[in-house]
Length: 460
Image (cartoon, rainbow, N blue to C red; front, side):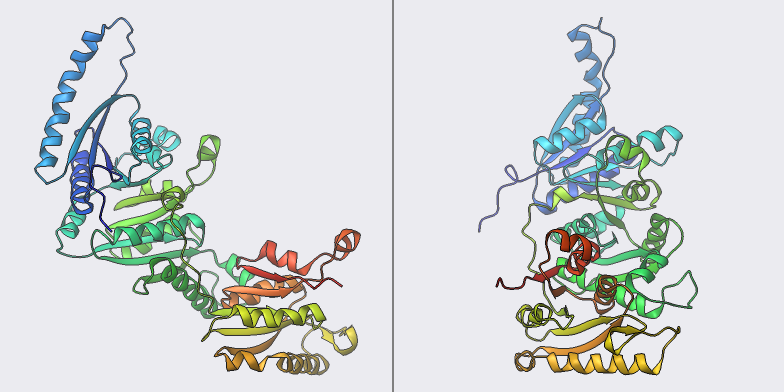
């Protein structure tokens, strides 16, 4: 398949105000344009002249020295091998850059960063921040050109740190790094800053470990989930993953992790909040832009949304049953979903004080009667494990989950197990019956982070 010529491929937009910081950004943009074989749009936004008494000739005369500066900067970047188009507009810089990025379907927007911090900037944002929050393309905010230049000359890999939080925006950031590797080798570290109380509740773990640390079982599970997710998106397993519990702001924890990884670039997804939501809601991407000591790339979901997602690999399947006909029916479907070489875990949720006959112990704590009941449930589960699954190369196991709420117990077990999908049956309740009794399947679908495959009972 022939590669499109640079003139017809999405270009790179670079904003400049002719300062030293802007020249650093220009160097990076030019190097990327050469490496990726793309046209570089060098854009300068001159401020509007509010005086309406000025004639068109006077306005053009006022812009003449600006055009000369733009021509000199374009000439300098052409000497670096880039195909440069000079573009001079009037208006707010961020609005001009976003408009040009949208008009030319830009691959990336490159801008320089500002080191000042004022109340006005905190409320309204710098040009870089406002551009990142509105651009349809990834915005690369350059603080130093040196790491990029040595990388693009092939002297060493670029050290990239990705801020991750298991959201669609974070997945877009990892996908962008996958594309960045086309320009040159990258040493990738993906970091997740977690809030311990939330994770303990999600995994259903009661721990006496220090509150500022993750218990080993939670730490290992988070690292497992992060490693699996990153490998699926990148297509390789060579990225380093780091999980750190923290009670401070997530951006502070992530910046500390990026420093420890000696990152040259921090990559983060952005939800691109607007209006009052941008002013009042905390934005991790904006915090990283304003606080990070290195360059930052902000990736909007739209920048990668057009790609066809990779097919998920279903290695671990969790199936649950309540021993009813429709519950047991889900087991066969779970075996069909599981891939060869995968794992299938069959579970049933019991109340922590349940005993045989549908009764409950009145005393707190574990009792012999409850223990015997759990053992009996475990034997029933073992009898339901299909031999066909093992013959198909699927490892099967069974376990009893103790939780007062069935749906919550299923969700927590799925997190501990690292299930790629949850398979469960549904009673097919409707109308008043459903309103009164509720639906475990519906509660699991509402509260679980994992995909849920619900098996409907056959019609009579």
